[in-house]
Image (cartoon, rainbow over all chains, first blue to last red; front, side):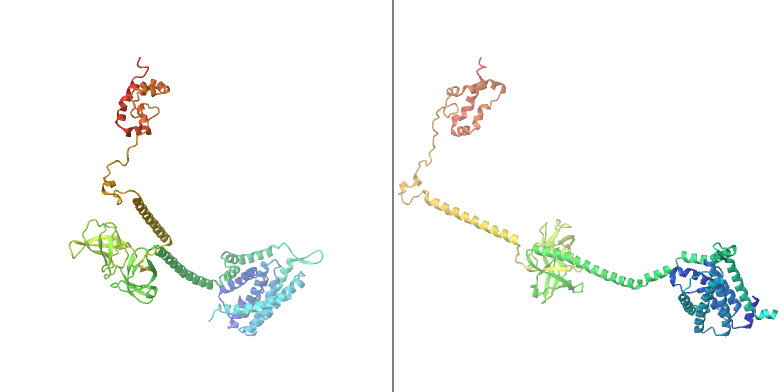
Length: 173
Length: 431
């Protein structure tokens, strides 16, 4: 928390959100990610926890917060599956850190940048999952490259719609 | 050292978190005997705890969504089902409205059909030629109780033709146009019709009053007129044929202007305020059905043959009169005329003498009786006193022979007194 306070003092343009938003939005993302695939079946080409992680990391412009949020979201996602806990945690930790680091340096209000960031970070997350599973843990993981691309596209499109909605939650001075 | 940590704190935090997760992964993965890595099927206590937290966090909202039927599949299905419901509902509502209108029209047609059927039945049975007409309008005034029909001079309607329904009289044609006619209803104040009360045979004039009610005027007070008596047309007004129903007596009220007269209020038989179809009597020449015409022809034939038979009988009697001798024969002199002949032209023929006379033979005496009776008949006399029947000897009197005896002469009347002695003195009884 001292780190968070230091960041806020250093960058007054950092957006702030109600405490409830920090709790409910990630929770909603986890619930929907667990529930929507039941409805959409094999067409659930999106990763809502990653989109939410990227959003908060970009807007908070804090690599540590992005890292922590990414790690938490990834670990919960792993915990809801039967896979080893930590695979998605590592991937989203890296994605959150990078998103926050990029958000410090570029204008994250631009939709194109948001679209591109979500697409690239999604591909990166999929790559990290593949890397950790196959090469770090030596597990036999079936992986389809087009699924990773579809998921990246889905995340980008969702981000286009979701980010403006989440922007409405921020506390304005 | 502290500044180094502050400077690279983000990276250090990242590395620390990554390292912790890698260590956690390493704990979960174990190497098999073939040298392959696999996940430990049995989660450790720490891993299980994390899974439990995650499940406890995510499951309640999922259960809430599931229990409250807010599932996306249901929403999607409902959306698909309800996508065109509004349009379908509007279409169905329009269809219902249209069907209601059609139903009302059909109902009205059915009612009209029933009315026309009854009217047609009456028209076919009615003896005079009539034309069915539809009521197409009215005067629109309470003071003028006239209405218009869709038949006019082109259809044979004439002025003063009677207008009726199957229930009773309606009015008369007041004015005739080519294709329409104006009918004056019987309940108008200016109308009039000769009527007769069915039971009491009291005649009067039917008029309408200011309220549109029917009343019979110019009737002397008569206590025999009762409520419910049927009123018929009298036929003397040259408009309505005789015997058509007019209505029934509703009440009898005294004439306010004349003391000894009464007004008979009549409930019309026809629904004068709800007329749709009427009949116009366009000809008062009797119109018979085929059966009636056959009956009339048969009657005429029978009548002709009867007349012919009477004529033949008369002719035959004339011929017989010519052939039979008359009382005055022009060919004979006066003293030889049959008129002066006093002799009996029909002398009584005497019956021939009986070959075996008995006691029943006319003119036979008592002595011949016992000899004439056969022995077989004498044997029955033993039972005669017991039976006491004194009428037994009279039985032959009821026979044709007896009748003949009765008609002959007085000696036969003395027979009963002569019949009794043989019965009272049987042969056995004399001893």
